[in-house]
Length: 86
Length: 283
Image (cartoon, rainbow over all chains, first blue to last red; front, top):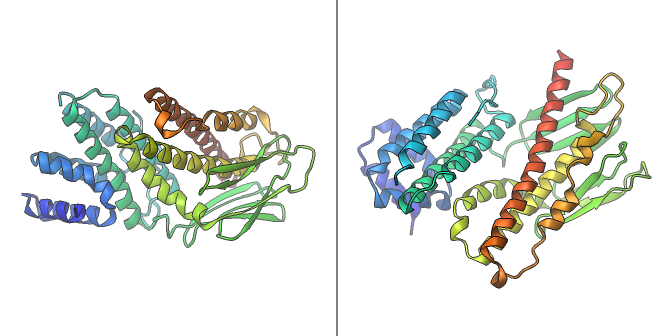
């Protein structure tokens, strides 16, 4: 199984803008396969989650770059709300 | 959950070591909060993916900000003559503690590191082999001479960085590990944490806030004696084989790891506070 390539394929075929695709591409490049397994598994079974994961990735990136503690707290709260009933 | 420890971007826009640590703390806090929510199988998968987004993003940021551990240089020096602490980054990884004219440099492969210098009642800890997890503690309080010498192996240097990310990844799949995998994970994290504690204790001995800043005299204080490292080591010794390990044993082992991490975090906080005091004195 080539997890990196699998995730790249998912991203390439997804309805994402180029900026988001580029961000995912960099993310995939620096990460080891084992870091990506759970993400690939989720997206293969529930492709509709990609939009949420992409927003999550971009928002965390912005919050880290801006040292925005409030934003990071909001992101986690959103995560909790989303997984609550799953 | 509070996340307020990151500083302002440096001139180059790079993340500092403190930023890196803060991002790691965020990842831990996020994981704890997610794990605290009871969910079904779908929720568990989602949680793991979200945690890996954070872990992967931190790796990405470190790689693009130039703070990649493989290339990073972390020099920490506390000069007791000037009472100045300095933390800088660039080049290769190195930590240095200057005691008057003596400099202890850590850790290049093959280097001999000497420790065990008596500083009031401070315990000196040095010598963890990450391959075996063995820890050596030397604490002869009657001598002011260096007592213990050990060789820093290349694995000590490299494995810390590897184990940090490996540990973060492994934490997301503890439940699915069989007993042998769990024991391997436990031993690795324990060894890594002990190594960090040992390094920190060494710095701690000269850098804890119990140094009298007006005279430079060192007061060991309760904080230095507080972490009962030997107790944690004893508690975290594995006495059963993989075949005999129960779920309760695994829970206890995880709790012992958490205790060890708390000791490490406590020392990190102390060192961070010391650096702040020294920096404020320089202004």
